[in-house]
Amino acid sequence: MRIELEKRPKVSALFSVLSPFIAFALTIVFGGIMFALLGKNPVAALYSFFVEPLSEVWSLHELAIKAAPLILIGVGLSVCFRSNNWNIGAEGQFIMGAVAGSILPVVFYDWQSPLVLPLMLVLGMIGGALFAAIPAFLKAHMNTNEILTSLMLVYVAQLFLDWLVRGPWRNPQGMNFPETRSFGAEAILPEMLASGRTHWGFAFAIIAALAVWFMMRYTLRGFEITVLGQSERAGRFAGFSSRRMIWFSMLFSGALAGLAGISEVSGAIQQLRPVISPGYGFTAIIVAFLGRLNPLGIIAAGLVLALTYLGGEAAQLSIGVSDKVTRVFQGLLLFFVLSCDTLIHYRIRLVRERFAALKTDEAH
Image 1 (cartoon, rainbow, N blue to C red):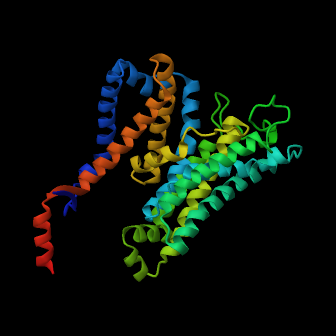
Image 2 (spheres, one colour; image 1 turned 135 degrees about the vertical axis):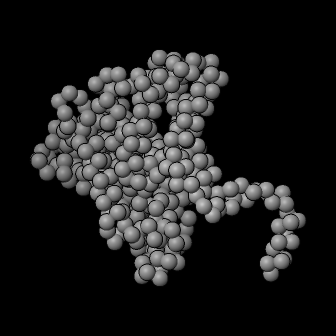
Image 3 (tube, rainbow, N blue to C red; image 1 turned 180 degrees about the vertical axis):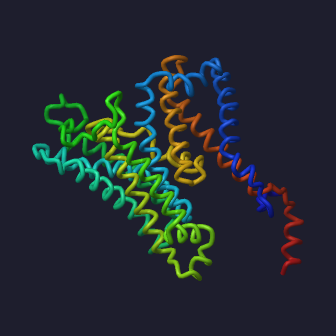
């Protein structure tokens, strides 16, 4: 006896649209059960996650700060996933973008110029793209599984950052703490509004989402991404190259992840530390799927997942749960998103081994 997935001949358009909302509702239900099993009041816990962070102006600014990298990375990943290239290493590209963009304010600390910040952003994009080029090269020219290579490179990036801030880039006036110098005024991403800390990284995220939406909807490149993602063979008949698409999608995704990294470091943290991300690169995978791989949907999904980060911090203070609970809560959301999509597009069949063998013989 084995389980098979059989593609449904007709897929309900209504359920396809409702799938993220169903997944979110299931997450709320099972999240409440999880909090109850932990001995916490489910209503109070869900209030801490989804309502309390929206009660103050400053928390709305924090929401935008946390949503910015999720949206930027998620938009880049949507291009990869829609072209059937599974970049799982955006967290590493985020880190390497932050490292590359920090060369100017750390190594050339005394250079003060209006060019510093624009060059930092460009270097961040280049750093993320070059790190994504490694799994792109391995897949395009050696047929290596990009899921494994991109994921393993995340740990390389994390260890490289840790080595830098504890070694050559450690602040000589930092009382031996593992961190770089604080960035100078010319290297800090300015705030968008006077009422809070929201920096221009959030604007970059919205602009990137709108630009990718336009590309996917109205350009030949967007059509190429869609065709190759749905059928590589059909794409070859149309004259499209899957190898070029591997390079384009991975470099594009890495560049946006790198931009997210340097924007986070320059705008929110303003120095490099051993840990600069609570897992944005991995959470952005949930954002991409929750947003249906649509850049406009990713904006909304990024805000929702950013809310879970803020809610997790609020829940730690108000009801006394650990940050691991936030990770589990986000994992529930990804699980239900993928489960709903699978059950909408496929039906589950139990196949007896003997019957399956007879069916195979008849087919021959």
